[in-house]
Image (cartoon, rainbow, N blue to C red; front, side):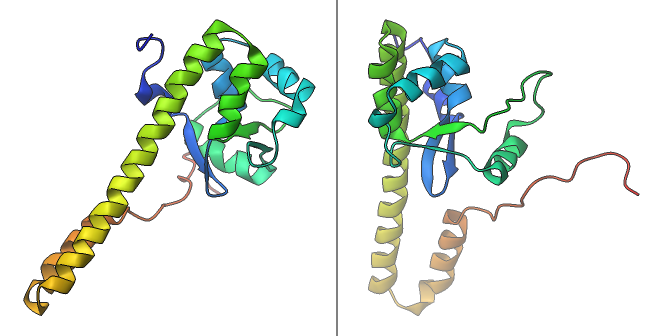
Length: 169
């Protein structure tokens, strides 16, 4: 079952929106091998199972921002509805709503991906804590070393959307 979908494939479909790690309805439908429309119908029929801390709908601005990350959409890939996004608990709830063997097996892989991401974040926090302890323990002669390590640990700033190539007036 591990060959079903790789963790890397799932991780590439997890985005950070409003401070939450989420998956988009279209990507989940693709993983479950169902149409997005059918996934959303199942959710709508069981909407009481998806409170705001499990799932929410993107705003137009959030969707535009995410589309820059997707790249170019294929012809006909536009939807007239704003996508829903599901947090980890919402994804877990989807398997009970969809009720297929594939949904259960894909959910297992998705839960593994979320756990792996959480472990990576905890490792980063632990490393920062240990660095701080070392800095307190040693005197100022190692300050430049600690500053250099902190710079390596800090992610680069988000450059924002890439400029669109082509004619500019």
